[in-house]
Amino acid sequence: MVEVSLIEQVKTGDLTAFEKLVQGTQQRGLNIAYGILNDPLDAEEVLQEAYLQVYHNIGKLKAPEAFRSWFGKIITHLAFRYSRERRRFKTVPLDYVRQVEDTFIDEPETLVLKKEQQDQMINALKTLPDEYKAALILREWEDYSYQEISEVLDIPLGTVKSRIFSARKILLKKLKEGGF
Amino acid sequence: MSDLGCYDENLSGYLDGALSSEEARVIESHLQTCAHCRDTLNRMQALSSAVRQVPRPEASLLLTARILSRIQTPEIYAETPLNKLLQSWGLLNLLVLGTLVILFGPVLLEVMRVIVKHLVIVTSLVVKLSWQLPLDRTNLTLGLVLIVGAMAAFYGFGRVFSALSREGTIS
Image (cartoon, rainbow over all chains, first blue to last red; front, top):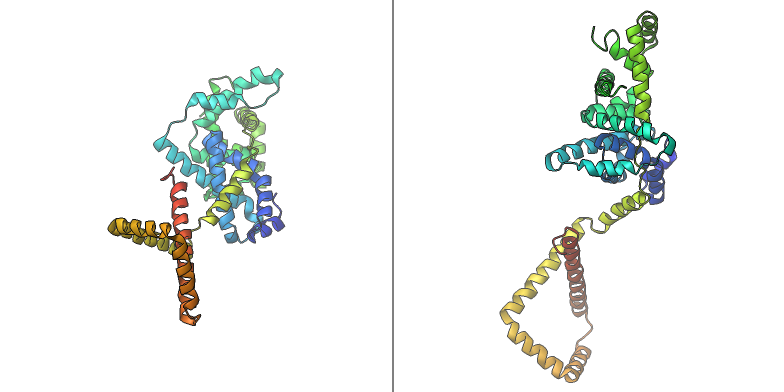
């Protein structure tokens, strides 16, 4: 949870406060962007852009306590746009993605079993439409409530419910073949 | 019945604690009698836990520095009206200078050669002449305008050059 006083300081243009804000929120922001884009480098690019928007537009944020939703909204919108542009101009080199994912730290003794499941899960997640992925990732990785997701994605509560459900349904179907 | 029949959508909401107490009660009482929904809920729970375990990349240590540097850079190159004016002034001066060099290049070169050759005489003449000029308001204003104008032109052209370099037009 970001402190209200920190947001107020950032609003005055205090760069030290902004640096603190970035350090305190960047991992969460990266998770959301990565969850939608499935590429660490693209996610970081989107995150940088998101923080530029945060810095230049934070004055428009009326309620500092709504920062979490506001920040999530900026990232998801930018990630959706990036994803659309990527589909139009570029294909993700799958070998490279695999190589990056292999560098994640894990416990060696559980690596073999978990790795296989995780690979299945990552591949299944990649097949989800961006809108479903965003709703599910906000819920599962960042513990956003349905209300917060509705604010972030600008959709009614009922749509949040059905998107998360649909995402789960697709994943279960995809993973069923793998014995999940 | 479909694979995720009964209260499938509400089961997902139930798992996330997003149902009203009334809806949750209905689900709970249904779960007691429906093995299919119990199984679905278990699978959704397992799925949720597996999704949460998916590894995520760690934010790079340089990320904050990169963001801060991107924030500070545009301030230097900000397209304020004053900066735009200075850039235009720089370009205009460059254009005038370029035209003069093209039109009177050989003459200017000859003048420069003479000045350099007789630098001592020229300097003393300029100093003598400047002492003879009255220090009135008109001369001071003219001098100030010339100095400021030249400095602004240099600065403006420097900005144009930097902007072009940043855009990658000039490597």
